[in-house]
Length: 408
Image (cartoon, rainbow, N blue to C red):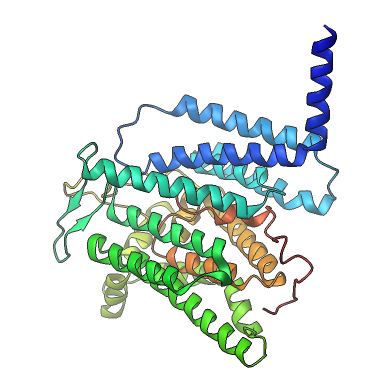
């Protein structure tokens, strides 16, 4: 009995001394489980009903959040307001109208990430993502799962490589490139940028995923430009500083892209040649979004909108209807309140990156904002992990104490 008490005391002492590390590692394990499960649902692997598993995962994360709150040092009221608002309205949007499970998952992961090193979260995301990509592609090439190949009128052959759709595969590549860029920041080498360009070329040639290919190339160009400017500035004994107006444009990139694309969608007119050309450029996103607005309208807390996409099979879908734009999708399906909160969270995150002189993170958020005008992955943890940084710890030890107000 005495031995058991001693062991309990040792465990309690260890947990008290290392509770921060234990809580962080626990969150990373839970995040890995959520990400693994979410990624698996974007592949052609045949899955059974996971509703009970999802419920247990939510309960596990909820327990973690409460345990973490009870063990953590008392936070200031202002540090609790935004997480509480996010939690509350995401839950209301799920419970009242929409029933989109992504709202529960994202709310739990965002709140649970408070104080956790975002760099570690991205490392977990990148490692698990690369492993899952390798498994998915290998299984598709080996015939273990179906490798969908699309032959669509007016387009080249498009290969999904084990994913449910070519653009979904290319979105994984896009966000993995962003993740690696975040981990490497200004230390990134020319050979790594060349790999990015190879990835962008590959998803265009094999998937004809034009938006994701353009996003990868744009991200590479931004990083290459910054690398060159930093090099030449250092050679002249100067410090390269990105202008404040450009940085502030990056800060508001999400609400700016959301506002512009929403206005374009609302203003779409099928009989106009100009709007027809613009609609073709966005691959019918404008017309589909306008149809969604006309048929379902706006609401405070969203609504469930049945959609029929092209993923999961190559047969034509005569009743195709899908809200691909993240902004229109969130606005109509999850409601105006969630839409506004997401914009506020991204601005808050961008301001934090700006104050810490983290320009590469601002570039990442800009590229993601542009990609989300066409793609619907903004709130999907299987693709986009960057919103988790909003309450996480994004200052790295080597940069702390060197934070600059508005300068790089």
